[in-house]
Length: 267
Image 1 (cartoon, rainbow, N blue to C red):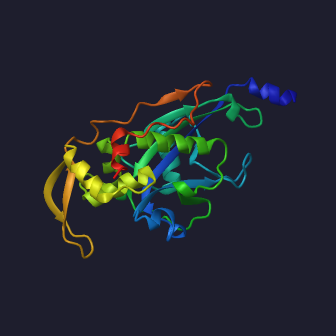
Image 2 (image 1 turned 90 degrees about the horizontal axis):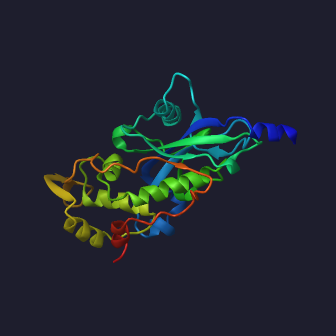
Image 3 (image 1 turned 180 degrees about the vertical axis):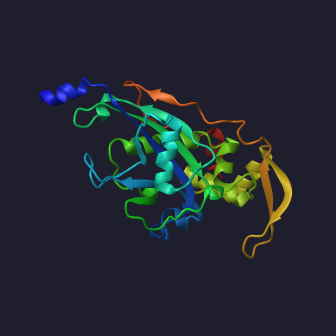
């Protein structure tokens, strides 16, 4: 008991974790039910790593690791990301710092500086199938997670939903040029539910956020679709600056969905 008490008085261990999100296919297990039956074409996926030591041996966790003296925080986050996925997205942002004493295990204080990244086709090919110690999971089918990583994932998803109007969100997932159907897939995946396509098209075209590039894209046997881009240059509406979760913060609080997202989800 004394050992635990002594450890709690020590300076906290500080590490970096990364929430990595990408658009992927609706899993086969959902075919005929849920998202797939409603016509959703994509969903959000994220990679997890299987822990090979205690605590939480054998459980899945966010990619991450300790800080190195010769690495900055961002370099440490990139190192965790690359070792997990071999991807190097163009943009990585600090999400939040989790340091509640209650997240301590074995009496040792722990602080996690969490980054997040959205990865798309331009960042490299993603293998959503297979994997033993590193595996991609749909965010709505996550296994039991180590530490408080479930809370961290929920925080990231809620923050993402609150920033859906930002041009940066879609362009990181599908590129700077996209069809309305591709943009619709992004919104549905982030919302985690069906959004009426006709209603979405009407409201997005009336929003003033998009401009027609004059290009056409042939998808399957359908007629060529118009290609759009955001009228504001990506990067002009950056994600919210990172904060620090104090003991009094409830990091599990559900952020209110952006008004535009809520409106698009109504017929």
